[in-house]
Length: 174
Length: 201
Image 1 (cartoon, chains in turn blue, yellow):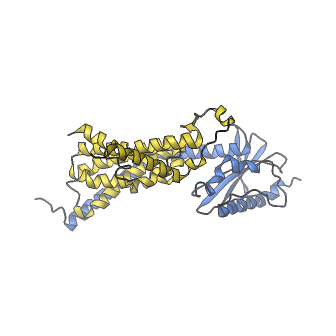
Image 2: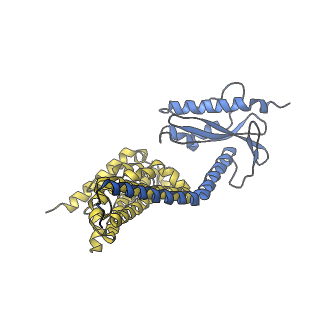
Image 3: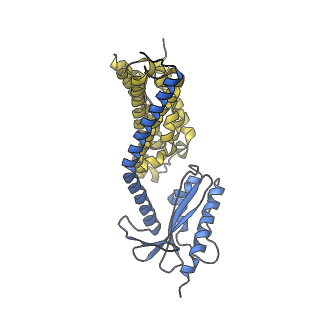
């Protein structure tokens, strides 16, 4: 008996089998590769924190959990995680603060889907380096926005202001 | 089976980018630097070759009415696999390629080869045809990326090629080369040279 290749029954059977086979294949691949991908992501986060703090690859990071989680790099630089919204999707970054609790050591930003060449410029050294040396006070930090990327720049501003406000109580030393 | 013809023809005489003018979008996007271009070329070559092979093996069983869907499923599966592999083993490059890996699914070259070749030829020939077309695409990608990185950033594969003394003498990188319009112009020039050389007598 030869099945009719264009009958509805055959088409349903064919597509069902195809989908199941593909699903199994993709799940297996995802499960197998997940640890590697996770490691890459963690490594990237580590590099972002270290680069914000301005120390080399072999810096020591200590995670301090709590209501306001921070990272302590080399026992003296405090690094705050930041989260915000850009134009197309989330943006995030790290803000490193010197032991005096006032001076910004450096920042790193990254983004999910900002426009390359405009909002995407927030990941460049040129944009990030201007933050080093800024003082944290009651006034918001001022910086040069990227022309053509107003929404992303505003997102960065909001993100920094929000983070500093959130952590403000921690800076006021007894 | 004419191995040489299947592999060599798509490199120049029937190049998918310069002659058939397919897959231009990704050509503009990933050619600012040589390294992503190499990885993109390799990924597309892999996907074209294996989707051609798989579709060719299945071709007698695929119901005609859903053949495009079946092709898409096979292509997307391969692309997702490539994407996952890149994320696991070449994270930096996968970040640079970002969405363009996923967009391989919609690369006209792949669907074009499946429809035009794999559905009517045996697995061996189809595999070689996919390989040839992928290589043809990669070739153009590499040529474009070579000039864009050299003139735009003064580097090749990230290594400084233009000596520092040139910069001191007043040489400047051409910032326009980094932007997509220049990729289009470079491809245009390649097509121009290619056409003038292969013009039928």
